Image (cartoon, rainbow, N blue to C red; front, side):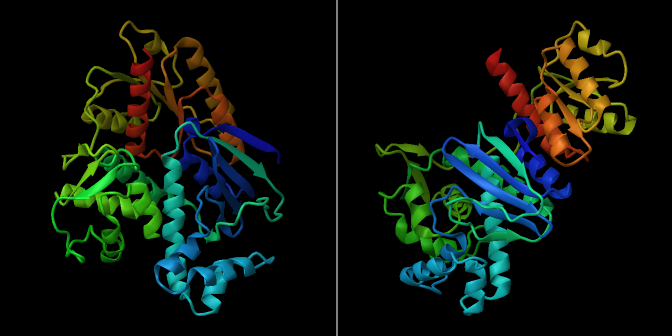
Length: 388
C-alpha cells in the first residue's frame, strides 16, 4: 500500500482514526501542523502513539515523577535503558515495582486521549498514512511516546471529542496560555468539589504566584495540559482567580459560557437524503438548532439546489466509499458552490482517499452523530459567512 495524503479538516480526525482502526489497516498515520507532528501506528494489536510533538521526555516518565515514584536522574537512567530494542518504559516501571499494571493502563488510556484530543484543536493540519505489510513502524530519531492502546479507537475518540468540547468552553475564559492567573481569594488546598481534583489542585497552587503563565504552570505541574486548564477554569468560574495578560490587565473574569452556538436563523440547510426516517430526524434536529431546513432527494434531479432561495450549506447522503456516492458529489459540485457535507459508510484508506477527492467540506462516518454534524455545519456556515 502506498501513501495517502490529505487535509485533516476535510475528513475530520475522528473519521481518520475510526477508518484506519475499524478498517483493520496496518501502517502509520502522521498528522502535521507547522513544525509539530503526532504519529500513530495501527496494527493487529491496536494503536500505538509513536511521537507526540511534545517536549516531554515521556508521558509515562512524567507520570512516575508526578507520583514521586522516581527521581529525575533515575528517569534519565530508565530512559537510556528503554532505548534498547524491545524495551518500553512502561514495562520497565511495572517490572521494577514503580507502577502497578492497572495504574499504568489507566494512565496510558488517559494520556492517549489527552494526546488525541489535542489533534481536535489543530487548525490547518495535514495528514499522511503510510501502509505497511505488518512490519514494525520506525519513527526515525524521534523518542517513542511509549503509549500503546490495545483496543479500537472508539472509546478514545469519544473521550477526546468530549475533551475538545470542554476546551472550547475553557478557551472563552483562558484564551491564551501565555496569560497569567492571579489570586483573588484564598483557595482551599483540597476542595470538596468533583470538578476540582485534589492532586491537581495541590500541584498547581504553589505555582500560581502572579508571575507564572498558564503555560509555565502546565509545564511545571507535570499534569496533562487539559487537567491543568480545567482546574484553572473552574477556579476562575468560582471567582478565586482572574486571568491577566502580560501587562497585568485583567483579560477575563468569571463569565457565563454558552453551551451551544447561537442559532443561525438566517441560514438555510438543504438535506438531500433518501432514507425518510433519517431525513426527518435530522431535519427536526437542525430546526431545533435554529436552522431553516429544506428537504430533497439525493438520487433525484437535485432541482432543489437550483431554487431561487439561497442555500448556505448542503448535507448529502453520498457515501464516498462507493462510485455512486462519488458521482453524486461530482454532480452537486458542478451545480453549486455551496459547501456540502457527505457521509462515508466504509472504513479504510480507500474511503479516506475518496473523501479527499469528493469536493465535500467534511466527510462524516456513518452512523451519523447528530452533535458532530451540528458542529461541522456551524463551522461551514461561519467559514462561508467570513469569506462571503
